[in-house]
Image 1 (cartoon, helix red, strand yellow):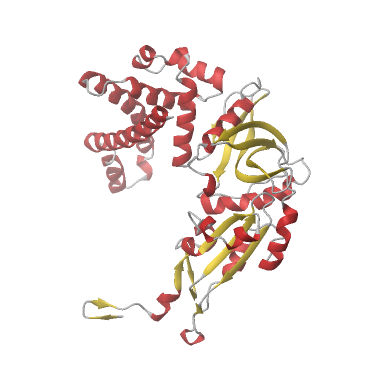
Image 2 (cartoon, rainbow, N blue to C red):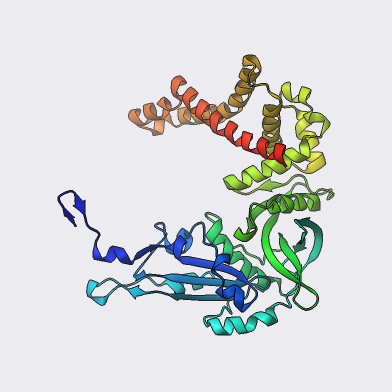
Length: 403
């Protein structure tokens, strides 16, 4: 409703909340952890559960609780609110808990007291599979385990674990674990228990699918990777990715390792790890980098580290920027032209494709499409693409320099 220039909110607007702000997730071990609000974290996205608006209607003062035991992932789901949309408005409140329950594994708790009572027994949890790496961060020990679906109990554990991806990986979906080509890598924090022994807290995980490659080889493809919010920005992603690389590196049947639809964050992580590995290879010396991308770079990166040719090219571009004197007009120009030549290839392909389709397009449609690929417009698009790419490359180089 509006009066003059003043817009007044509708009555029902006060019952609409941002789902990402009202959902509180926790990894807990004790009743004290459950009560402690400082250890809560929120989803990065909720459209895969609550729709594109990522909003929940029908409540004010809404507080959704989604708690997991830090090791076993025993789950509690509940909610509380201060007010609910009145029947007089004739609008039904959203079904909050049923929407979340659809993505949870069977056996979750809906009674908080029951959940808290079960926590001590859950501390007996230990990781499944085979430990393949351990490392320390600030005197805290972490371990990475490789496991597949044949390991007893892992199917049920994975059902609990995979629920996190819908809140943190865009367009994520649950995988078919019955397919034996899946491989899993889980990261745990290891700490001494309150009495004896050790307790293990889940920190993140990665899924890898083994694709067939002619004649008897495989191409592992990284599908999903997530480091849980309490453990982010600590270097765990790089440790996990490097460990997975090391796991496949000695396997002769593995040609190279690829990635399925990576996020921008994962692209930067992969670039960082791959540059770290390739920077010491003979093919990637400064003199070779200045002379341009070569077959020897692609071959050496694949043979030594299972890096695909496309990724080896990207590594070359990052490392060449590192040895390019951008204050030297000629050096910097040569670098820009080299990158833009690669960026231009898809545009040329698009133009050829449109020419073939000309008979199926109206004259106006064809002119509009070709205009976007005209000389001036194409140069503008190439320059914009180069600047974005260079900015990403510099982030990777900064991390390399400060590691």
